[in-house]
Every structure is written in C-alpha cells, then in structure tokens.
Image (cartoon, rainbow, N blue to C red):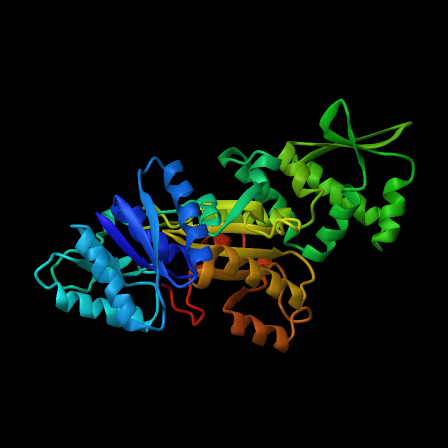
Length: 409
C-alpha cells in the first residue's frame, strides 16, 4: 500500500493515515524540498521506533499549479498498484487535483478519505465504503506527540519524584490545606524551601539559626502563622518536625510531599494531573496518556543557537490530539498566555487544546484584556478551582476537552 499525503505543517496530518493503515510507503507532496526531507526523516525514525517498516519519500511540486499536482499524482498512481490519498491536509488545489485523479482513474481502486481528529471519525470520499475504521484509529503518547512535532522530552515529573495511586491520598490531603488560601500556601512553601537537604536523609531538611524567622519576615508572614501551618501538616501526617542546637528540622513523608512543600505550584499541578489520569467516561479512561512537569526541547533548532527549552505543567492526549495545561496557584500575567500558546502550537499544532487553570478567582489578577487575549488564542480559562476538592477537579478536567464555546467535542 502507498499512502499519498499533501504536506501540512501540522505533523499529525502527515502521519495519521500511516499509523492507522501501516502502508509500505508514504509519499509526501509539497513545495519545500528542505522541509519535506526533514519531515520524511523524522517520520521514518518515529515509525522505525514503533517497529513499522515504512518507506518515506517525497515529491516536489509547485503548490499553485494544479496541472503539475495532477501530473505528479498520476505518476504515483501509475507506479504503485494500491494507493490511498489522504485529503485531510493541504490546500484547495490539492483537493481539486485529487478530484481529477479520481475521475481519470475511475477504473482503479484508489482510496480517498478525510479524517476528523477531534471526533476520531473518517469520511469515505471516494464512496466505495472503505475508510479508516475506529478500530485502527491511532493513539499517541505525550512523548510520541512531542517527537512528531520535532521535539524531545528532557524530563518529566516522574523523573523528579515517584507518583502512583498510593500517593494520590497524600496529594489530596495537601490540596485540602492549599486550597484554603493558595496565596498563603505559596508563601509558606517559599519558607519551607529555604532549608538545606540533609546529606544522610534526602527526605529531611535542615534550617540553621534564624533561617525560618528571616524567611517569614521576607514573605511578610508571622512566625506563629507559619508554625500553625506546620501543625496542620503534622496533623495530616505529612511531616515530622524537630529542633536541636543545630537548628530546625523537617522530615517529609515521601518525595512527593517534599516536592509539593518546596515547589509552590506543585500541589495544584498534581491535583490536575491525578484527576486527568483517573478521569473515566463510559467505563474507559478519557485521556489515553497524561504527563506532568514536562521539560522539552526543540530538536530541530538551528545548530548555531542553543536548543530552545519549554516546560508545560500538565499535558494529556485524547487519541492524537494533545491538551496543554498551565496551572497557576498564584499571580498570573499575560506572558503566561503567550508562553502556553507558543508551546501548544509548536508541539500540537492547530488541533491542540490550551487550558489555563487558576486556583484563585480571576478577578484581581486577570483583567478583561487578558480574557480577550485568551479568547483570541483559543485558550480556555478555568478559574477559582480552589473551591473544588479532588472529585470536583476530576469532573472539571473533562471540560478541558472543549471547543471554547462550552461544547464538549
């Protein structure tokens, strides 16, 4: 089988049919030889990793010359017996050329289809009843998605600390404390992060002399208020504290608890992560992969410059469509919108969903201009999530899969 793809900058449009039908070869058609070669090499490496033996080639055409597009398509169809033309990517002239080919080669069984990646349905364009069926629709992992768009995962939350079902209860307990006052939580965790990790015990931090009192003053927090914060954590069995001649000591229950109490936004991030990871619809997990704390780099950056690095708090995939989530437990400015939009478009293309999740109400830290910019960028705002416990957040993450107008897709 030979799959013909009209090249598009959205990588999924160039590779979806290949992943679904597993052809012998894929031919990319487009007008930029350097770009076609780079993508053909990228997709070849990707499919080789998946154990697929697929040949990738490209045909250079003048994109504004429909006659040339028809001639190149005719050459391909005459060369290979079983051809599939994916009409999802490309422009109008490609579609017009495909129509000519369908008419000219009506005696041949040339498959043509169009895929909707959101609804995961395929339209049989040539009318022979054959199309991409639901049972072969591919599903990507978060890492797959980033690789296809020319990136590389440098690290994730799971490389920083372990996370699993046994730790969900700990994150829930911390969230119940955090959501009472997220701003105060941020200040408190800035204080707890000021200690030095004990070389003999990585889950224990040491605070010399007046370290805590000085940090409380810097954060405009009364020392007694911080002690009450520690008391709540002790009651929840998240920490143990002690004091001796060398200073104050905090021993954390595990590495997740330690990370949550030394990185201000981590608890909110992990609540979103756990909720998305466990969100079930009709007995099945809604998202086929969920990862938090992703640091990625652009593999195809110019050699003369450092590889640009990006970070996203939580990323999930439904089918082949990614959802990029930025979680903010404190103040949020317009620059966060631009960063989120840049990462989502770079590693997910036009089909990506973009979410800015705020633990506090938007009033006071997001003005009408930022709301307008979010709307223009297609970024969904979820505010005042502090009002929700774990179950409430789990229900909310299903709404991340939205068209921006309140309609679930």
